Length: 128
Image (cartoon, rainbow, N blue to C red):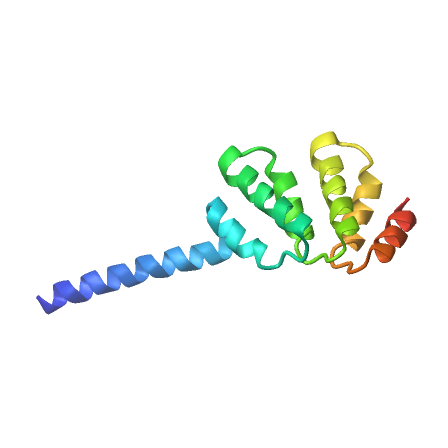
């Protein structure tokens, strides 16, 4: 009886370890986990809306995951609403429209984390 209990305990322990470790490695597995992970970093209302939509698109609608991942990776910790808008446009240009790639890559490299609109304007200008 004790062997059976030990085997069951060991099996359950291994299962839960794999589930938890797997989620840690691969990231969120559904839109709720995605929202929980990325919303806590949202600095603006616009970023919050974009993150929510990106999570919904990525897991529920399953449309253009590269675009969704771009938003999730770049928009959250950006405090300037102008910068968040620029990031959104850059992600759209790269992964949906396929235009202005050099400019969009520059925006995604330099815009995340920008706190004030004047800085966002300067970065956008320098990327042109």
